[in-house]
Image (cartoon, rainbow, N blue to C red):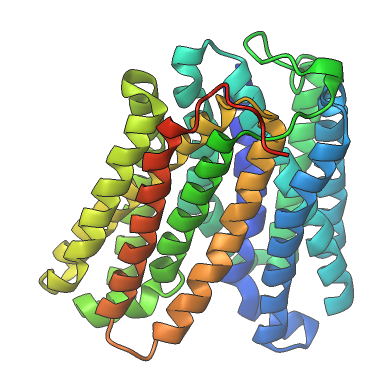
Amino acid sequence: MSTALSMAFGAFVVGVSELMTAGISDVMATDLGVSVASVGSLIFWHAVAYAVAPPLLLSLRPRRERRTLLLVSAAIFTLASVAVAGAPGIGTALVGRVVQGGASGIVLAIAISCAGESVPGNQRGRAMATVLMGLSLALVAGVPLGVLIAEVSGWRSAFYGVAAGGAGLCGLLIAQPDLGQAGPHGRHEGGGHPQPMGRRQVAALVVSLAWMSAYSTMFSYAAPLLKHRFDLDGAGLSVAIVAFGTACMGGGYLGGALSDAISEHRAAILAIVLNALVIAAFPFLAGGLASAVTFMAAWGLSSWMVVAPVQAILASGEGSVDVALGLNNSGIQVGIGIGALIGGILHEQHPAHHASASLLLLLLALGACLAVPRMQARAAPMT
């Protein structure tokens, strides 16, 4: 199995773990004897740990120990998943989710870095996109499967399933000793210690943060927005969400292919502009299921086209790739929170306000992306 596919499996497992709780929060709340809001706190603290752990641990550990950190993180993720599944109360579940979140962030950051280093530079975008497709697949197939398992045999079975996936990842790492090592096309970092990030990487992090904030501003309230704008019922909403998730998978790979074909910088600009055009059209679309599916497919495709080019910019910078990708994952979690906060403030307003706020954030992302070429790839790293 190629490095990218193995790492995509890891991304799928941690993606299901992150996203599944939102779909089974009511079932968990009933079983644990707490409110749905209390279960919602598991999502929040999972995201906090996901954001904090990767840049902290990856910046402290020598890069030559990356495989060990990946294997240990996968093992901790597995044990934490078992702890959540067997939790007698909300306290144990909270501790398990925090540990799970920190381990997930480390696994994903190293997975993307390893995939990019396993191939020549002109294939890096597609390799990283393959890993990111694991996250897309988690959204499209893994989360609905987890919800189905929870409905049939209880939410604990769903988390035991996640633990089984974590054990499978550990097995892959043990069976393939080269996984997690610096790839043949990776950059040597003197002394094995992470190097400070360069300005080009910092600009890419701003792109990622602004883009995810724009995305989350609308996606966090996708259900009420779609029902209001397109007059959908529950079945229609499900169809639109499936169309969105499927398009996300295609957008992730297309962004990687464009990154290899026309450069990561041009691909990122093209994706952000397309994403902005789709969002700008939202308030003017006709109602009905066909319009909803068309919008969601275009939104999913253009949104996820952004991800792989930004990852490739981070991987081609002069600073530590692992730390940059870890910070990027952290920025994505922060962006989710910022977008959800903005969306919540606008929730009682006209749906067009969500689109306007999202557009402003995309303009910020575009401005940062346009600044990337001015940040010379060999400029002195920022300290």
